[in-house]
Image (cartoon, rainbow, N blue to C red; front, side):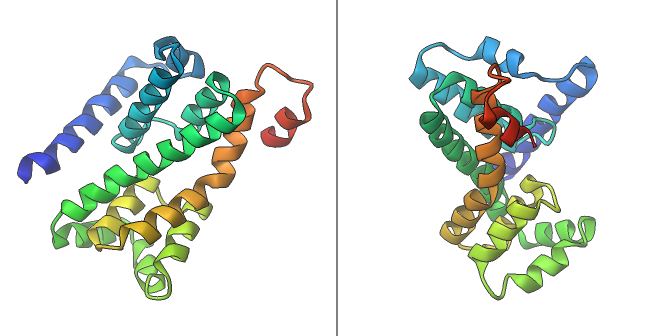
Length: 192
């Protein structure tokens, strides 16, 4: 059990350290250069990147949405990204769920706004999960770990969380899909 708790933290520190000490930022082209050309392998690669993102606070999820928009036709890109978001929010949830109760108290001390979430949760887990993703007050990974540590039911949590992410997911995917079409209405609508 101890190993299951420490490995994600080591992964987060390793990935975060590489980006912080390299002095460069990650771009769409960087990800595209490593992505396989075979569509199924590209989807699997992106899902692994979404999983990595869930263990690293420095990896931007909107970048993955845009990459998927460039690699796939729009409906497929939206599906790949929806599955990717579910993956990226499931891993910290499971990490929180596997933790002990004192972990919840540590999160509450570090992020006092989680106290308000605790009160709102009594009404509807689905709505709270949706709201936390839609407004984005706290880091997604922290909220996912908190919900897992409080043993929130998975189905209302993941359904609300994915739906709360949809506006960003749709806009970034369309933007990635039409990034080279500067004169298209879709490009300008999603950019604003």
